[in-house]
Length: 335
Image (cartoon, rainbow, N blue to C red; front, side, top):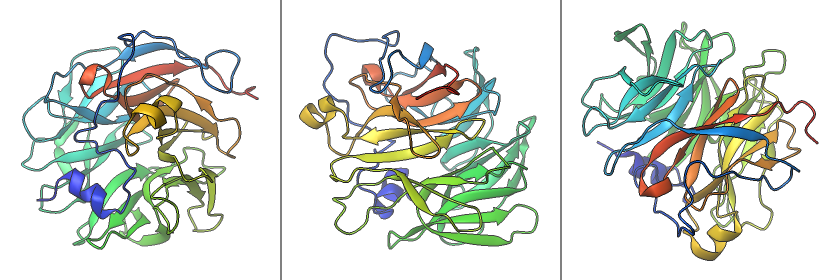
């Protein structure tokens, strides 16, 4: 059984923060979840109403939030029900979790379908990582989508809910983006990459993903986009100095913005932190313009996911791995 930590190492993505045990960075002044954060490139914060959704003490963890399109509830991976990571659901303003999976493997990367009825996720229940789909109103109803010997992780739905895009990896560390038609099982291969996210906007079909570190990149990754037919592949967010990474992209509900996390970008991280640990959550327009920072706490914050007006993310504030979210102001006029 491969742990997700080993899985990430196989990806050849050294700068990706280990979601099992992110090392805490130094903290100053005991900042808590109610701190206000000012983005780097805006006159006033583009967010408000920061909420902590889970409060799991060590060694428990909550990770990989996957909110519904309207943000009314979110799926996530958690150890609240036992030592193995299972998928659970929470209403955004309710503290009571509902267990979705209950199997002998680990279950990660949940994504709610556009109609809010299904959740896709990666599970190791069969010995390697495959993609499964469960009905939210009937968790015992499970459909296995992939059966290959490779590891398949991080599914994301097409706007019509008929296809999934995911990352497929081998033991050699090669990861590629794959689209599968859930009904026909026909696949389309889009090239190298990991952690894809399909834009909800059907009029402007686009898939964002995290690039794999290239030769001479210093082990750093960036946020890229590609069209579902494999054309238009380009980088949106990256560092030409090769000192920091952009990771874990996720589109806004209208497809106009992308939330992502950075690694070793903040001054505090570069001065005091682990160069391979996430630092902050950002948003950027889908053309790569107007990046704005949503968080600047000295703790690691990563895996952002946009649902409704909120951006959910994982944080290790206080040394515990939990899920928070912020309400983002309308950004139509952001410059």
